[in-house]
Amino acid sequence: MTSKTLLYVGGCNRPTPYFASAHGRGIAIFGFDGATTTPLGVQGGIENPTFLTAAPDGGTLYATSEVPEWNEGLVSAYRIDPETGSLTYLNRQSTLGSITAHSSLDRAARFVLVANYMGMPESERPNQSVVVFPRRADGDLDPATASAAHPGHGPDAGRQDRSHAHCVQATPDNRHIVVSDLGIDRLVSYRFDAETGAITKVGETELPPGSGPRHFAFHPAKAFAYVVNELASTVASLSFDAESGGFTVLDVAPTLDDTTGNHCSEIKLGPDGRFLYVANRGDDSLSIFAIGEDGIARRREAVPSGGKTPRHFAFSPDGRVLAVANQDSDVVTLFAVDPADGSLTRLDRDIAVGTPTAICFVTVG
Image (cartoon, rainbow, N blue to C red):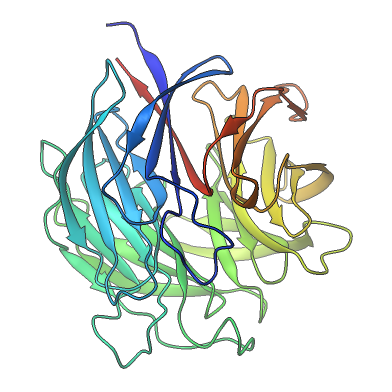
């Protein structure tokens, strides 16, 4: 079978207080060829699939359910049909915490890692900020093998009343996992046993008070990482110590000249690590940074995101297209990426999707 690319888009389909709409129908499925998309169907039967993660072999898709009224969110596993792109439900597990916000796989793809933003009081169970789920050979998920809670709070009483884990990723060598916690202004590092999934906390990296770290990205080739701070609308450039799993803050820079009323969302490096991209909600733009030899991200320009409230974006597998989920415009906007200078040019190929919040490209075949 010749390899091909599929595009999955998750979105809000259940009325939720902090979303302006709930126009999604589940997980929308598209064929993707160059920058041409073909609708293939919708996977229903899932509540608020607001984040998607695919296994690197293209065989399985994992979707989180973000429902604020629930004490425990869900992570659901689906088998991907390589011919049609359709999804077959496998199973789901409780995420042991509320408002499940993010998922990823460890570098060996043996475990699914989940971050719970948490909307319940700390006194309510199960109250776990980060959770590790083993994957079976067929892609099914076993119950959690490890979890941890993050005590503490930040100076912003409205947004930092408690821990709000927002992203979890394994380090490039798979020896640690790191969680960005918006509520406590920290990156929390855990030693990770890649055989058993066990985690042991080894340290925290503090960011400026009130920053609100949301998502982060490791450099693909160098010992650097980059954090987008939702509340402060800044990008922190950090050096990374693989031995300790810890970070040192090198620089903190605003994503815009005027960040009034802005809240950042996604952050990603281009495939070769020379350019960094950040989404601005409020300003509704994408900021482009150049990465210096010293590892510091320096802002170059910002371009309109093509809609309202860019919550998430992802690069196509070849890095030539950037797809942006403009949540409150019910559209995914496509941009051509210039490999020479990292600039973005909007393509006239918008994809209509109700309340899109997550984008996942998958290569099959």
